[in-house]
Length: 329
Image (cartoon, rainbow, N blue to C red):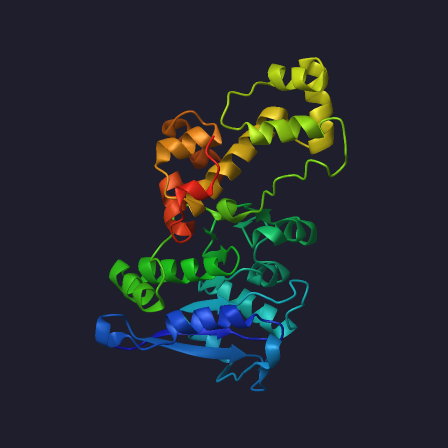
């Protein structure tokens, strides 16, 4: 059987990690285990070695003309997402898309597709830290905030770093077979697919209660140490010596969010830490984090993180820790 032709598009500034991911998924012969044969080619505007961070270089083995034959074009992310792609590369991407070739960009590779104008009016995403930059530099792109990968018009974009693995495996799974994707995933010692979105990775640091030494610091400190108890806006307002309406107004001005939204964020963060560092049963995690019940906790995880507490624990749990290591409420 003729190998499937896959192109790794190379130019100065591409990320070595993404190049490695693409090579590991598409460039290793696993036909003896039932995986289709792939012909992965390193395609660039000219045959000169392509520099990458860390003193690495990538030697192209095909020029841009080979993209006419490719069934899939893979665009690595960039070390600096403001790096302009060569004009010839952008034109080759436009021509490939016009031919109907599937194009997939990893992480900051979305910026390259946007430079080519391919994402105008389309849904796309990138690493959560780069979402605002992508929106600012390419306002016509419909930036998704938290998916792991998304497709629009035969153009695929993926979130940061490990999401590139997710996208590559998904393309194998949908383009060839689930068995092939599972075989590749096992050899890479990774999951064939992950649930949820990159919302579960976005940092939501607990605010320092003394950051501004404002009048609400004591209330936030009190709430953080009593998450396991019922906490209402009137009760927190009374603790601050304010009316509920005045408290809500001052709290939103100080934190940028409402008291209930802030409280929910802290409870989710507390539950995440318990899931990561303890083997407490779900009802106890829900109680300590202040959700009251496992069902309520599960509903909030689904709404905020697009995953379940059990799936989150399976993905992020550290080695089993003693329950006594954490202070019981």
